[in-house]
Image 1: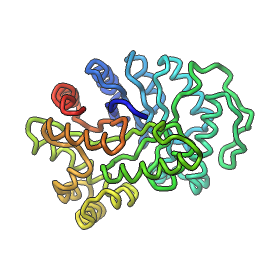
Image 2 (image 1 turned 30 degrees about the vertical axis):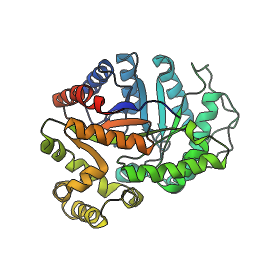
Image 3 (image 1 turned 120 degrees about the vertical axis):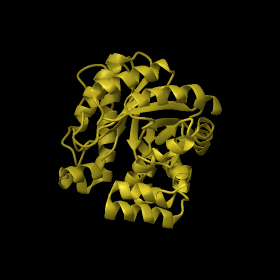
Image 4 (image 1 turned 60 degrees about the vertical axis):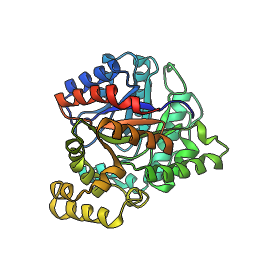
Length: 338
């Protein structure tokens, strides 16, 4: 898929709804392309939040990244997504992912979660069939009839289903069966290139054009006139996710393995604060775009060159500062990106 790099803003579900709505409106006013929301822990529900974002905006795409098929039956996800897309006039992007870490952390894993890959592929097939009015599948994980249909006509049959994928097998499968791919919580350009190799191999295996697949990725962005302060702001989030992510995200990043191990061990032994103190400047530059506007612009271009088509800005600031960060990004960073 060719075209200019799209920029989205992530409104995380641990934030107050009013703040998420305000930042979605601001993102649209500033010319951002998309607003994405998530569903982590037992914070605010993704469909209710997304409905409010739809009502508060008129142009930006609204991304759901990601919905967990173990929390909601795939047919319910299809119904909700098609309803949202109707309300939004065709602006919804649906991300789907098993998110096992979240389920296990909440104590909500069940026997189905022993087959995350199968479950995710079946959920994608069920949802796509319902949205497109096509024959379904004989599912082995979810209870659903192959002839199940939506009892209303969606505003569009091609609502894009993004596979939330991290490891090699799931990335390969995403290239085979999904409309698009949303990479995991933190990405480096090295991991991005490796991930897209897996996606493209899967696409070619079934005769699909790899260029037809959209690829979005979340990226921790921190921009400010004081580069040091902006870079320090990403250390806690980076420490948290370096400890949590699948090993392949670290292994394919190109970062110093010993530096990575020190952060992982520090978080394990002393928590996120200890891990943040172990985050080096090199790791900040590998996994984030943090610093002054020109530096951040160069980093974003590197991700575009690696193959990302949609960058989702994570945590560019907190509270009222977040609005200022979005304004600064729109005013001073975007001119540095082709």
